[in-house]
Amino acid sequence: MRIAFYAPMKSPTSPVPSGDREMARNLIRALDASHEVILASEFVSRDGAGDPVRQRALAVEGGAIAGALVENWQSPGISPPDAWFTYHVYHKAADWIGPSVSAALNIPYFMAEVSHAPKQAGGPWDISYRAAEAAMRQADGIIGLSSLDAACVLPILPDPACYHRLQPFTDTAPLADAEEKRARHRATLVASFNLQPDTPILLAVGMMRNGDKLASYRVLADALKIIEGGNWSLVIFGDGPARGAVEGAFERIDANRLSFAGRVSPEDLPAIYAGADLMVWPAINESYGMAMLEAQAAGLPVVAGRTGGVPDVVRDGETGDLCAIGDARAFADAVALLLTDPARRDTYRANALRLTAVENDLSVAADRLNSILEIGRRNRAA
Image (tube, rainbow, N blue to C red):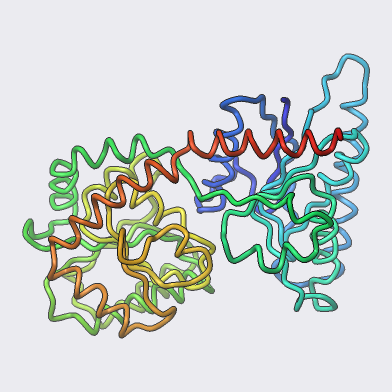
């Protein structure tokens, strides 16, 4: 099939790295394995402020884009798409394009990673909220990447059978390959940041933004202050507008233990994951966390907060340990336990490599997506 792909939250071509961008790119790669994927639009519909005036303007702009797409695809000699696929819709980022185009062209409409929050009805995002809900009701297939989303999405669907679960996924091959060269990658980290070779390397990877990301960094700093007497070094990869606040959160910790490495390219991450000893990320309000999935695919155990879809990615007691969200003491205890138990880290490492290859690989997702698309296409034709 020829599939029109659209991500209203953040375009897959965005220069700003994030888990959202990476999952959009992964979905395109998975779909592209058996189909032709075209990027329908780079229009960003997110309204972060809850401004009805802006939401109306976004609706108008999205409608104009939809009209232009339909006009083009209905022109003589132009091949229209066979299906539309929208990634990541919720009350702050509605799809103002896909539903109209799909209806006009009479093609199946698919969505992935949608969330529905009834408490937003009548609130500042009501316009966008209702558009997102209408899109979900129209969809021929909805793909849930977080198990928590289903509870509120399923009740609004005309046919709950159109809702399908898909594990978050990535291309595990380069990550697993990096793990095979773990000794070399660890030596590189030690040399690059002047670390002690026999000191466990903790790793945090996350954008430095105000809000939940900054909150995660603050919990991490509080937790590490509790175990400052332990044997560890922390390397942080990430950058952003809140970098000063992030660095300030770690001021009470010995600077010799800390390395702020700044932004890193996705191509360099496999070696970084493989070279570290433990990923530490409190995951405040995280949807599921692409960095944590990628880390495990490189054999890196994880300590994280138990929130959102994180338990879908980090198997508690198998590939890492999950703690009460925002509890610095519990987080510190979990990190301390794994720092002093290398055998347990090795077990988690082996489990992470095995499970991600079987359950979270791009090829597994491609097969699952093909099945979902075929079900939706067949049901629509019935």
